Length: 168
Image (cartoon, rainbow, N blue to C red):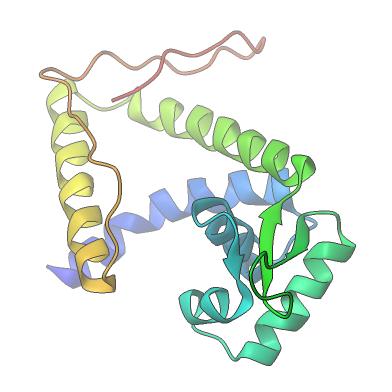
């Protein structure tokens, strides 16, 4: 099953990577991961960030230095311990992540438009369950995703830039 899933997710990862390249090409994959972790854990300290990124503290510190210089992160001294630094996204990083998600969703909608409603529903249910299992394995909890009873039809975004219908 793992081999089949690995092969099948190649297309999904290609869509994901194409969106990343078009919107966040100035950030490395590691930098983008760090920005996304800070988004999820606003005010995170450097030690926790290094742990979540599975990297050495010194490497995470250098990564943050580059992100601060790029205008993606802000450092704030801790309120109770001035030696501890809290990390926050800048408005520019928030805009960049929103643009990435818009692009990614448009690309996904174009692919999903070629699937049946049943196939989209099965994919969504499977990925939600996969997400829960992965979070449980990592010791995290995330928002519970409510699944629609019947996945709505998906329309690819027209070439003229009109808004696409949201997909299941």
